[in-house]
Length: 313
Image 1 (cartoon, one colour):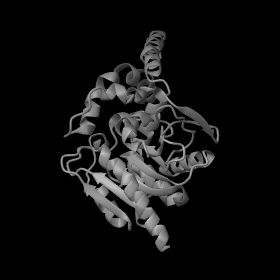
Image 2 (image 1 turned 180 degrees about the vertical axis):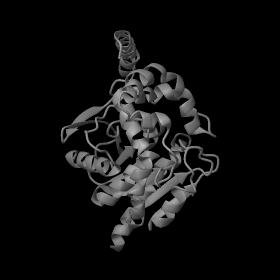
Image 3 (image 1 turned 90 degrees about the vertical axis):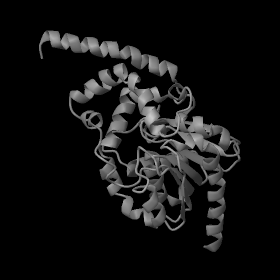
Image 4 (image 1 turned 120 degrees about the vertical axis):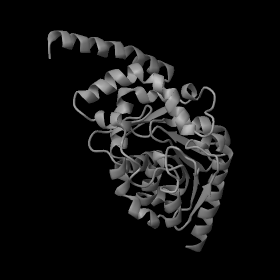
């Protein structure tokens, strides 16, 4: 590389520090940090301390503020734990090859460190895959599941080019350190609207959900790694779903433009012995915003069903 090229690259990296710093200032951590096995996780807790516990997991490209924006007011009677999934938002991700198995292990350790009683897990999209893995590997930590448009079966399509390219030497550094923080903001609005389609996106959603945190280098890399290997991850666990006995309620829209509901929620809900699928006409992928009341009400239903199942054991 020539001296002029090196100088040009250095200038780009320096320029990219400005929007990255602005994002960090605008969307500073809103909650608490806890260290689990050397990894800092960021979370927010709301609701009465003695109330039944609910763990809330966001999907890909997001952070805890998306779920909190949609559901906090509806979950006021519960002790809700809003977690930035490892690598996303303000949570760290440890090194090494990452997978839903490792993520569930870290989340289970987080719950144990918090001395948390078993929780109903509300999870959206890719968070649904993590919630199912948690229920498979650590059933003692899970009372039941409320899954919103979950991504749960392999062959969801090829990973976007930028997700694959983020893992390449040199090119990946340019994407995470220059392109994403400098130019990514112009794409957030359109990307978010597509996740709500065919429903309207809430006003000020991009700002209120702190969506720009995905443009931070660490979050971008973690999310890209998840999405580049999404089919591999799901293929490794989808044959085990039928063994999950915890009660579950699935919400999905037949017209979801992000995930094919007939490929994901329909067969998985049929395979799980204590699951129910609720199809909502006209709902988009981010249906938890417009259907927050129904999603929150499902928590109580799942708790009641869990009590009934325990009574039969």
